[in-house]
Structures are given as C-alpha cells and as structure tokens.
Image (cartoon, rainbow, N blue to C red; front, side, top):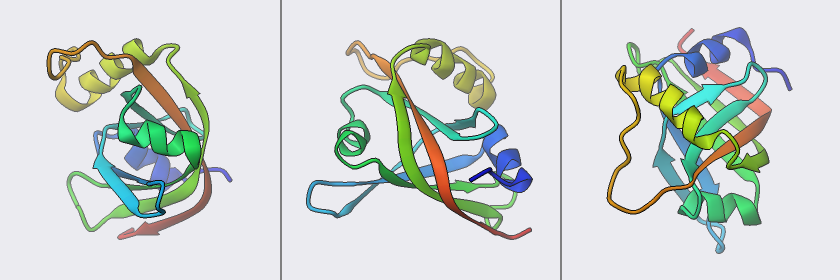
Length: 131
C-alpha cells in the first residue's frame, strides 16, 4: 500500500523510530533506529548479524513506529514485511542517515567491523495519530 503523505513527512524527518521484529518463540523484540524512505517503502539501516536481521531473515513481519521529534504524541504505526535485505549501498546510506540525524558523518560504535545492511519494508497497514 502507498504510504500517506503525513507518514512520508515523518520518515523524511529525523524522527524517533522503533522497529519490532519477532523472536523464534514469537515474542517481540524492539529497538530504536534511524529511519528513511524511498518514497514508497520504509527503509531501515542496521548491522548484518544483529538480532533484528536474524529475526526478519526467519519471519519478515515487522511493526515500525515513527514519532514526530517535536510532538511525540504525533506518530505513525506501520505494519508490514521486509521485502528486501541488502548490504549494497549500506555504508553510504548510514552516512546519509547520520547527516540527517546528527549533521555529521557516521561514526561507528564499538571496535568491531560492521557490514551495514538496508532493510526495505512494504507497508500492509498504517495508522496515524495526532494529526
């Protein structure tokens, strides 16, 4: 389904974002992350091997909640599936996100090498609060 304009606005801003994936036992696993859009999908950048990557490799269903950084009671919930996972362009994309969120180039956390992965999410259901 196409993403409504108010949700695209939140995805294009440096908004708070929480993504929930499903563990093997069906329990939810939620993490905060930076978020983006390609104009049609929700786009998340993560590290290959992280728990959310292992979870969506097994079960692509996710919920994404994006909050307006200026008005946290204005938020969107997007439920859908991860339809694409790729490392191609991952390093460049995290740098773009870092500029969006911090105004600076990306600085990796920790001392382990990271392979950045882009997760593309297709929305099946959306809900917007606080118009």
